[in-house]
Amino acid sequence: MNILFVSSEVTPFAKTGGLADVSGALPKALAKLGDNVKVVMPRYYRIDRNKLEKLPIALGVDMGSLGEVWCGVYKSTLPKSSVEIYFIEHEGYYGRSGLYDENGVAYEDNDIRFIFLSKASLKLSLALDFKPDIVHANDWHSAPMPILLKTVYENNDFFKNTKSVLTIHNLQHQGFFDKRAMDILGVGWEHFNQYALEALGGVNILKGGIAFCDALTTVSEKYAQEIQTDEYGFGLQEHIKIYSYKLFGILNGVDYEEWNPEHDKYITQNYSVDTLEDKIENKRDLQGIFDLVPSDEVALIGFVGRFAKQKGIELIASCIEGLLQLDVQMVMLGSGEKWAEGFFSDIAKRYPERFGCYVGYSEELAHKIEAGSDMFLMPSLFEPCGLNQIYSLRYGTLPIVRATGGLDDTIVNYDKKSDKSNGFKFYEASAHALYHTVKWAVEVYKDEKDEFVKMQKRAMKEHFSWIDSAKKYQKVYLWTMK
Ligand code: ADP
Ligand code: GLC
Image 1: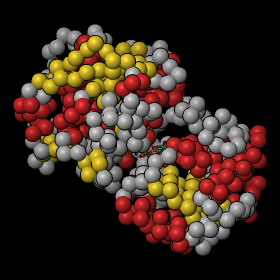
Image 2 (image 1 turned 180 degrees about the vertical axis):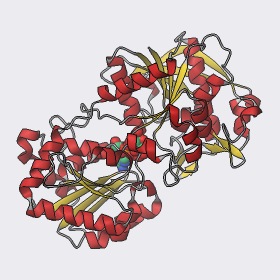
Image 3 (image 1 turned 180 degrees about the horizontal axis):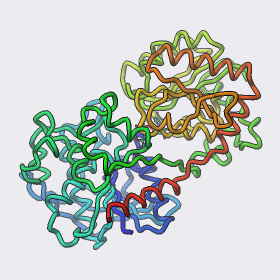
């Protein structure tokens, strides 16, 4: 199959979260299975043009009353593969320091920037004479593609047999704009209604994408159920229910080339399930990095993630002082909401011997935290899939998670009698539940060492393969053709 895979972020070129990891890995897995995949993303300012190949292509894109807008195209390949990735070059739209925002404020022309990405991607496949069997869009940024295929391109011969798949990585971000987006999209106003593009008097791009795509997927089975409920639907639950016949949950995989303690290039001491005792060197290293009191015995708990409400940072903040009364140390890496950056930095100043916080983005430190911690905290309020808990499993760093979305699908709660347990889970989204679960996990770590190690080894042997996920996507692709 020819697959045109479009994403607003792709590892290692530009990343703010898990979407980039998925976009860097899934196309490679599909290619390994024999598909012909081309990936498209914007050429953001942070992506060095000198490392890319400039193509002799200029694309003219119809942008409604903005007229025809032209862009260039660069090309490269995904690392360690021959999968081609194309970069849409437009200085005005993408030559900025952020991907979506700056200093926490979203760019006011994000509708234009990402409708442009979608339109330019379709134009590119025409220019390359690459007839896609599947256009695979991700989140609202490329959700205009399924909309365009069923409207503007409805009678276009080139796309006659093209089907579209839209993957929701996070329902919270929907691409909600005022009516000018209709003009930029160029689709007829008959689609400005509550079953397609209209919401609250404005234009909801994800909502339109959900209506028009041939298949809708999300990144875990649990989340596929959750988004049809009032609690997790972010206002689109009823809309999604209408289209549940074409909704599939497919869990993300892990790129074990990147996330594997056996050959992780960032960590002090490589280790495997057979040399688990070597993991301690990474704990000592981590304690050193954050200037914590050196101790092999204390339970070291890590956190890596966006400082966003989604990640349960408010729950952590509410009980942090209680948590730090336990025999624990904690390290946090993240950035995002300003209050949280200030709050956790302040806690680090007050408890320097047992709490460390690094505000910012660091690939290296993320790996060091995975390897050096005994446990990994992910108390998310919602989590479509979540990658860090799955990375943690491979590092023998037992996840403590709230039972939601992909966290619930991947983590099996500790039970001495079970031979499947691989972490600790709580259900209620409360600081109380979080605190007591951490306390329990620390007790198991201290008092039931053998059980803890058994779980670590079990976790390290688990395998969340991208090939398995890619096979499921292929089934969905075929389903759209029936
Ligand atoms: P989300 O996409 O919602 O942010 P995921 O768990 O799917 O959550 O993926 C997050 C990815 O981003 C992981 O690869 C994680 O290691 C990485 N990440 C998040 N914040 C940081 C940070 N501050 N520094 C380094 N990596 C980070
Ligand atoms: C989103 C979700 C996260 C998921 C990632 C990749 O950003 O918040 O749970 O793992 O996308 O699919």
